[in-house]
Length: 118
Image (cartoon, rainbow, N blue to C red):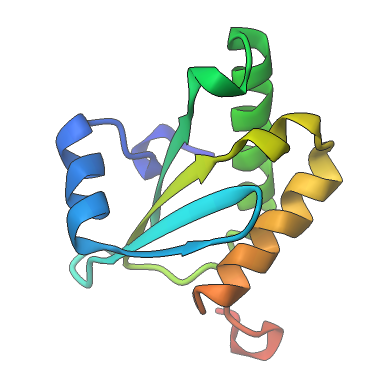
């Protein structure tokens, strides 16, 4: 995933937390903030130190980025997404992370149906 599609600044995270809508399952919380002036979506990731050491946190972030990369054709544009990993994500492999993320994205109604794709 290209770096211009990532949320990096703390201020942008705080705006998403305050103004965005949140959706969750056991493994992830996702904040969705509509930004109609943006032509692409952006992703911000947060993995707490409570989840594990830096190796574990970075593995989870890589898996989330790859899952979003594979789902990018279905994710709606013009929005910011902040994804927060919860403790159970540490014991999951890539396929479980991807299916859990797909579930929470469906709950938040930001995944297009395959027929709606670009």
